[in-house]
Length: 490
Image (cartoon, rainbow, N blue to C red):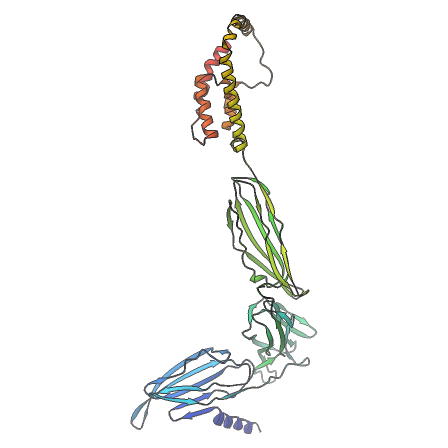
């Protein structure tokens, strides 16, 4: 009986899988195939100048390979050139090949189509020694919504396994990412192997995920032979819905933006971290941009940490920014708009604006517009006082006698030994300890009537208020003060 079946298949192959016209012949290597089988369409032509059709796919099935070979043979005391091309692909449905045209020595041969039939596989059952299960986390989904496909292989513990290999096939309508597989476990008398895949649909429509299969090698106990078997799963049918226009993300998310410090100086940048966490097509979220008018901004590339939880695909999107500024500023709100598949509605989440305060040092505070205005006011008042002094000089002459008396009294008092007040800092120490130019400027201001000291004050004014870079020699300054100190001690 088996011999008759084999002969019948060969006759079918001969009559229906071969089309020949003179010097050209078209065949397929198998007229029937199972899910996952490779099929090879072959064209053989004899002639000097041969042109085969240039194919990249046969219908929706991309070619796995295209192989061309050539040989010469003797026929009737003449050399005949034979050229062969083989197109290999993996169909998943019954199909009829497209009409093919071959040009041989300027003559065009057109061939009718050949039917290639898919044989529906025998799906593994619960009572079988070898079983393959195919499951998906959801069957009604949206474009861009990731789902988890699980392929689970089980064999009874008393089956001696030698080898196995799985070849998952999900079609071209998905972005596919292989996820980590779980470790084999014993369960109810079976050894269970589980593999997981992330499927993200590209377009809407009703899609059938074909039977998955695994090739398994076991050992026959009686004969000790190695036996290969192919085990099939059932199919899965999906309904894929289109997202609203101009919406690229779907799922459920939260968003937050944080800074390491909210108050800094112009020399110290702040670090901003933007985080989005949730379930959905989080891998598709594009980097955010941050535009501020007067700030220097550096942005790092986002990182995405993904995970599986409760059968859902999720992750954490993190993007970091570094911002330097010389003035206060506000970080605007970051927004994400997505489609919520649970509530079937559009949602927008946003961060709160963040206010950043930039503190200047003491010199910066003095050079602020309000401080400069105050200094100008003080200078103007000082000039006015000096002018009034000159105006009233004629009234002061009569006081000279009184002042001379006071001076004599002062000299007498100076000659009387006095104790230095506890904790009092000498002028020399004050000058040495002054770290900022403004601090030194305030110390010297009361000695502005001395011409040498006035020179130092003028240099300091230029540095503080005019942006000059005069070098202040403290050693020379102290030498100016030493004679004054000696006079005071006399």
